Figure 1 (cartoon, rainbow, N blue to C red):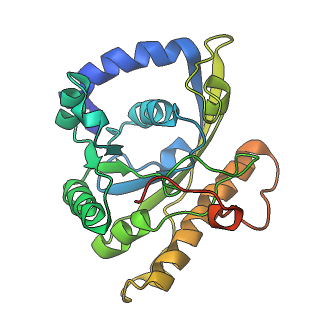
Figure 2: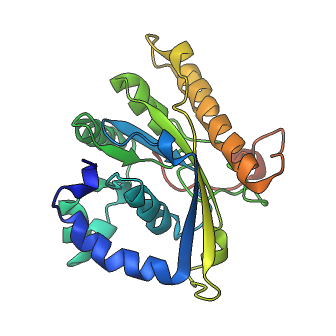
Length: 243
């Protein structure tokens, strides 16, 4: 029995979202068997469109898991929608410093420890790379994985930018777009386990996760990513998202 087969508020959300998604997109999966059908897992995708959570969440549903995200707290305060999202286990992330980030981490760890799947964008925001390659990641996902011994499954997708370009909120309905999604093997973080979670350890582990996502995206795009990953700090760009 897959996780999604159990009655839950997700059935309501799926009933609303999936028919709309079907109008604008169709999915083509690569190595879908690599997505764990049960058990605790952190799903780590690339991120370059504001519509990514809707399409990636739909894809994860089709793979038999219930898509839960770290979501902006403001979204969870929207009437009706916010109630549905809270009831489905979405975890609010408040702006405002380290203490609130720690609270989000604890909530995420508690949720995942009960055998659930959590989608975390390691980049923290839309990539700033001009060619839509994954940029330098943030350390929240690997901190959660290393501290609580959770597997990280990398995921790459390509095509959501045709539905909604980066930085845009305008949806392209026609023609119907194909979203390519490739699932990777769990990232080997054994070199970092059992060690103090210093900044160097977290940054190193995050780079390994970002490498895994990038390699999957290279396969989908049929081209090589730049040798040096885009770092907004090197280009005087502000990053949003602290996780």
